[in-house]
Structures are given as C-alpha cells and as structure tokens.
Amino acid sequence: MPELVTLDEIRLLLDTNSLIDEIEAGFVLYSDGKVNVPPVGFMHFDDPPGDVHIKYGSIQDDDYWVLKVASGFYQNPSLGLQSSDGVILIFSQRSGALELVLHDRCWLTDMRTAAAGAVAARHLAPRKIDNVGVIGTGVQARMQLEMLCSVVEAKSALIWGRNEAKVGKMIGELKLSAALLAAGMEVRAAESVEELADQSRLIVTATSAHEPVLRADQVRPGTHITAMGSDDDGKQELDVALLGKADRIVADSVSQCSKYGECVHAINAGVISLDDIAELGAVVSGSTDGRTSDDQITIADLTGVAVQDIQIAKMIARAL
Image (tube, rainbow, N blue to C red; front, side, top):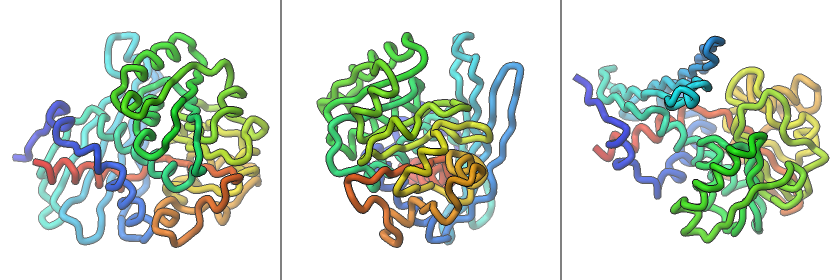
C-alpha cells in the first residue's frame, strides 16, 4: 500500500531553505528538454464557481513520475471552508507503482508557485530594489512577498487590492510574518495601482482577474513584473500594450504561455510573437539573455509547470 503523508507531516518535512534552488533546477531541466510534461487538464464548475487543474510529468532517468490534482472553489471561505484542496501522487518510474500520496491540500502548490516567483526575481529583477509592489490579497500574494525576502533586499512593500478589508487583513498577517520580520521589511497599503507602480521596481500580480489590473502607462523603466495569476483560459492581469512595451518577456513554459497566461493575449492582439518570448530555464542556465540593463522593463509570465510539482514532491520523498 502507498504511504499517505498528511499536510502536517509535509510542513515538517519540506526544507524551505533549499526550495528555491530545487525549483530553479527544475526549470533548467525543463528548458533543456529533459522533462516530459503533457498538456494540463482543466475542469470548470459554475455553481458553485470553481476549477480543477491536473498536472503530471516525469524527468528523464529519475526515480519517480508525479501526478497532481489541485482545486479552487472560490465561495468556500464564506462557508468556513478552505478555498483550495489537492493531492500529489508519486509513482515509481521503474515499476509504475504508486508509492506516496501527499495530501498537501494545495500547500505544496502554493509553495512551489511562490518559489517560482523568487526564481524569476533572482534572474530578472534590477539590482537595486527599494520597494516591492504586490497586486492581490490572496494566499499566493502573501506567499510571493514572503518568498521574495530570500532573493531581494527591499525594505518596504506596497499592497493593492480591490477589497480594502482584504488588503488590511493581508497587511496584518504580513506584519507578523517571520520572513518579513527577519528581512526588516515594512508593508503598507497603496492608495492606487498608479502609486504602487510608480514606487516599485519589482511588481507581482497574483489575482484571478479576467481584465488587466496593470497598464503599460503605469509602469516605469527599470521595472520587473512577475505575473502569477493567469493560470487558466480567459484570465488576464497585464494590458497587452505592457507586453509590447517590455524589453524582455520570459515564460516558465513557452508552449503553455501560447495557450493561456499573459503572452497569449498579446500574441492574439498581434503585439508580440512567440519568438519574442524566452524561457525561464534558459535564462537561469545562461543559454539566453534575461535582463541586460537596469533600465529595462522585464516580464515573467508564470503559468505553473508540472516540473515544479515533481521537484517539490521529490523533496518530500527524500525527506521521509
């Protein structure tokens, strides 16, 4: 029988100090063509509203292959329920046997997604960042900022969201965050997206928006933007003109970002082409350029790739 690992156990087993490096290594393997990642499976529900993502894949000559099911049902918090849930299954590449069931309730997905944002910032953000701007008020918005404390030296952060109460709640949580306290980072609410963009050279968008929340005219030269939220068809956080304005566009997966994410909107509008998009793993390995000057505008379009799930799942398997 496969071993069941609970969320409480998973939290104790994950080595967060090495997580960013493990996810970074996974991106390099992916861009080097050493990862088999089939197309993502999606299911959508209207009443109540929710979606399910199914991601799976394997790394060449590895011990395991991995399948993940992650769901988000957005009315759950009003019912006193967690909005997300999920499980990761780890199979042997030698026998196909199911060896581990990680009932992580989407926590590993949240962690590997936040780590991907840190990888993007490590390789694409300008050298000097005084302030980080975060657009969004959900779990991922908070975790992005916490993970960024490991790779940037900014001492302040601005938060903007459509719901002032949610902004206040998030700021209250962040002021108690061990990561922000250790980094000496102060956090406050932005009055507007314009204020946030004007004062931030590193901006993270982590929303479920279906219309742009950040426009080209709001972004100053020398800014890096990591767009996290457009992980499904129809979602969009960035104005297509912003991608046209960018000096460098990088995607976690060019093939995925041609179907959903930020890039596909700009491609369909004729603003950019696939040839304008570099892949994050190639930037990390140095086989293609990322940011080449501090006055460039760079964008990372991160839709989430199964290699991230493989890497973080293997971390738990090794720790058992």
